[in-house]
Amino acid sequence: MYLVKNNARVLYVLCIVLMGALCAPIALAGAANQQALQVVPSYVNPLTGKIEDTGNNPGLGQGMSENLVMKTPATLLVDSEGSIFITFRVGLVAESIDLAIQLLDSQGQVVETLPYSIVEDHPDDNTRDIRIKVPHKDPVLRISLISIPMGREVVCFATFAPEGEAVAIPLAEITEDDDSAISIFENSANDEITGIADEDRGQILSFLAIAAALLVVIGGAAGVIAVRKKKAAASAAAETPSVPSDDS
Image (cartoon, rainbow, N blue to C red):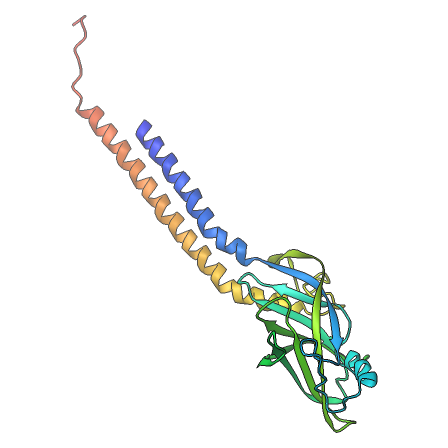
């Protein structure tokens, strides 16, 4: 009987260990880090000191750059897989087309054109929140568009500086109606969180299914072992010859 109880305890401990191992990736998948960023628009390429806009007017160009790349604080998001996203605000939406965002290397040269997604439009002030995926936390961006009133391409640049410490946010606690979601823009960027949660949901469900299956198998094995031990003990007791008493 002692062996039966001992084996049951061992199997119980194994169940706990396996559940912990399976739930660890789920816990990691359920959190993201966000950090507020200061946006620094620049008419001059900050890495080369050169103006790339064909208007070549520093006096007017810096103001134009600040109307294109807004100084509204941006948001840096690092998801559970280490991917880095930046959400920031651009202006002149109604007066421009063909927005392009390009990543620069340390020499100030274009490395690649970054795709972007629209997080939210703000028609009242003619601005838009957009999100890009970047390879590191301090990118230098070349931003260009076609200005409809000017009839030409406008070019400026943007860098980012951290504001405060990064904050961990459990994705499972964020809903569509949660104003404390990942973006610090008012009522915006909730799609960033739900999108990442959707990507992780399949993986989480797979882990849960595996964990449940393992528990069923281990629990069944523990039951079979216990029953066999009891039968063996009962059989041994039945086969043991009785010892005559001294009174007989």
